[in-house]
Length: 600
Ligand SMILES: Nc1ncnc2c1ncn2[C@@H]1O[C@H](COP(=O)(O)OP(=O)(O)OP(=O)(O)O)[C@@H](O)[C@H]1O
Image 1 (cartoon, rainbow, N blue to C red):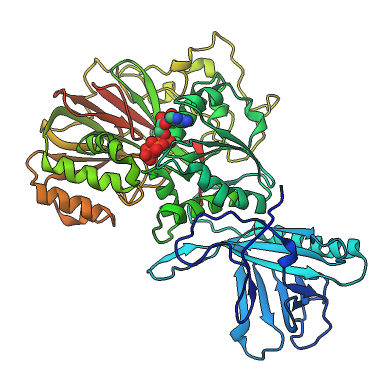
Image 2 (cartoon, rainbow, N blue to C red; image 1 turned 90 degrees about the vertical axis):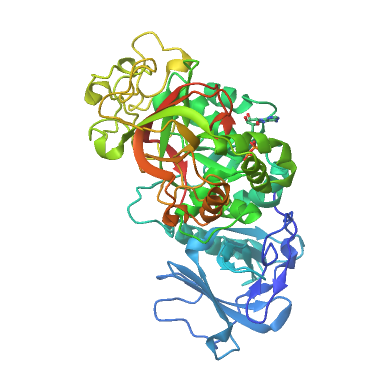
């Protein structure tokens, strides 16, 4: 339904209706009451003359209109829309002081509507912006909601006024769609306009506030951006996985989760367990932070090169990226567990200190993201050494044609699924022979069973746990690692951490150089012998991603495409994407860019 009330604020120069207060946004319900809108369109004044490329209340290379403040008819504004900005200026003012320019890269939508008062002939349009602004009372910037509302009352005919409001709304929407902040070197595709999203919310995630976050921040934003969604509230573990495995994906342009990373782990693995996994994994996935770790959400925000944000500011940032709808590639790591199970990870594999902190701090969940700090202090007090063997395939030693490296040139028509196997290949197999890339089309195609690119199965379908891309770099887990792999001499570790994204949690920038689709795993390990203060210094430095610059002799960092870890001590946990997995030998290989992630 329509939004029905909102906070209104008119500042000295320009009427604004910010939905949240400055600084950290609180959870608020934005209920819309259009009658509170404050600008009247159609005043005949020459105080601010339109530029030569504008027609008054008409379009040439933009739009120009003149307005008065409905709350004070003596205050008038000129409004200009160009291809990249909406500029609002107080007409009576001769200086530029009262001019406000809204960049359309910050605009998520605009809509036209009638007022609640049936006797009112005027119509309205509202434009919704989320510019990055300085925080109130603290340093840095964060996105904050700003609404600009205009009343159109050109004539006494309500329909004509509504058509004029719709013309402005449409022009602002169209111009905003074209204005997106893209990073150099990233290949994007685009969600369709008015896209359809399946939005999965885990009400238990984090401190149990995910649904509040949804209704307070995300639902209004989706409505503003005309994104239609189906809300699914997960009821139990593996609910999302089962749902995604069976869903008719042609109904959705994206699968988005509002939760911790664990729910996206289920979605990704559900997609790869489908018979049509090659096409299914092309469905863009998105993340909205609702957990206590929120590592992928923090990474996605970090990739936009914006200053760090946390909590609800991070939620707003990720919500903004979702409705802007840019999609890039996402690496997945195929992880073979000792139980012969294979799972796919988009985030991390941890053993030792980090994994133990993650699992042991579950009991401090009520303190939110602080649980990791508490857990770190507790585990530091009883620091352990974990015995095991580690081997890896450095990026520099990886065959260029093999899987695990970034391959943007992969043809868009996938090979037949029947030629693929999820089982590890023998050490002598050629990566080319074994490679089974998914369709790496950057087009945002409908998930249509008549699509030519979709491969039909010509042989017996593989069981769900054997689907997904073939791991051409991995030998059998019982076989020794290939000779060209690097085997670590030491067998005593404090931690081993394999990162696919930049962040380990909202405030731990573990792999500063990582991107979502760099085609490698950022492998860190800390050798036994590090002192408690040195380890603490490393974690404190990690908050700003400065741990590698400390020069700690116990910390080793390698970019790899595959690795194997064989724990020898029985204590400690093994986690994949923050979830505990079967303890024992494990090996993994990266599949560069096989999934798609809503990012910026
Ligand atoms: N309604 C539910 N009740 C209980 N568990 C659920 C429910 N929905 C999903 N789950 C499971 O909860 C687990 C944790 O979810 P998720 O990682 O999304 O949140 P979180 O653990 O709070 O986040 P974080 O790891 O950042 O603290 C997942 O394995 C998921 O399967």
